[in-house]
Image (cartoon, rainbow, N blue to C red; front, side):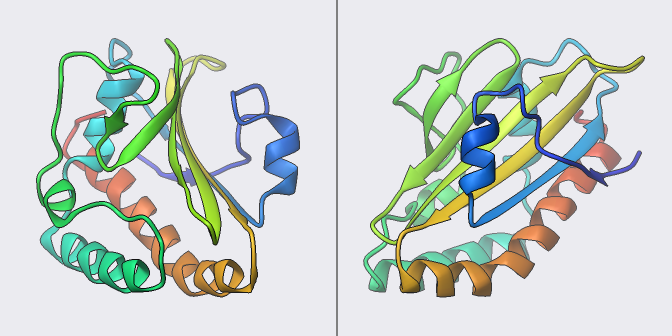
Length: 173
């Protein structure tokens, strides 16, 4: 039950060009004991069950980011992640608009004047056991975006690894 840092899948929707141009990128791989899960179900297994302290940090971060002119999720989107039976490109999943949704990959994110980001949840079948790879890419557009990115990166890395480890420990994946 390990969370392993890895390279982002280069055969996914994000592709080599975007991965190489990103100002920040990371990817983590986790084994799937439930190979029947869809990418939407994997997304919710990871991101819908956050510890209370993480919700409070996200709310504080969003309030500060909104003051800087960034589009941010509402407090209600943070506190209660809505689940629907069906999702399509352009709709929100959790707090983020969906950019791509296929059988093995979901890409969501947000575009802002300071920075764009993409989150990919990919189901990978390249070994004896299926796994999921969660990748994040951020592209800063200006100095503010670069400053924000340098401040948030340590929290992002810690938080994402914690969410993945919690999902594994709770056997949601």
